[in-house]
Length: 197
Ligand SMILES: [Zn+2]
Image 1 (cartoon, rainbow, N blue to C red):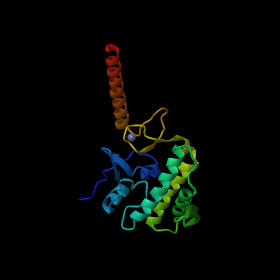
Image 2 (image 1 turned 90 degrees about the vertical axis):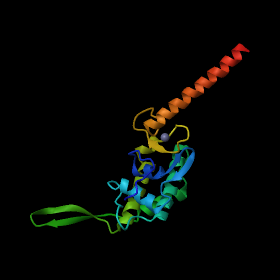
Image 3 (image 1 turned 60 degrees about the horizontal axis):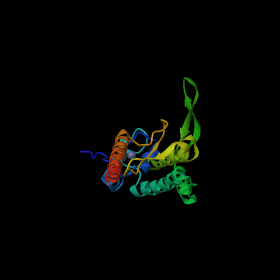
Image 4 (image 1 turned 180 degrees about the horizontal axis):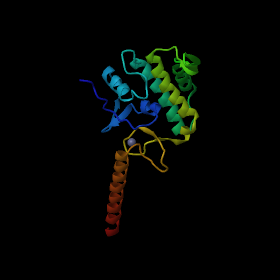
């Protein structure tokens, strides 16, 4: 039976999903790429976006190295700092594993059509696709919309497509509101205690 990916997926850009393969579960940090099975399950869930399902999908060590660079880069952005140079260089190194060149493809019944030549295997294509998405996030308009989830205990990132959304998911939003509610109740109780002293 195929292994199902147990970690969170938020329909975010694939580089943000890669960032989110380190996630928290009941206060414990879990690595969604910790095993070959889990890594393969993650790639399978993203198979429409990352060209990677199959025998020559990217090695776990490569994915973990790229994730480390993506995390350093994204953490810096969200913290208002410049991404570290080594993180940017690592992302670039993965991106150029699958260079592309335009080619004209010949057709017997019409003019040539524009095609693309990518002299790379599927593993390198997948890593390059993840790296390219990280580059788009670091350099494009998404850069200003990248957020760390504000819910207690959550370590995920998301893209704030809706203004004033502070959480990576509805579940995190509910948890944050609940935590705020209990905090207020506790403060009221403490305040009430003092007033009757
Ligand atoms: Zn969250």
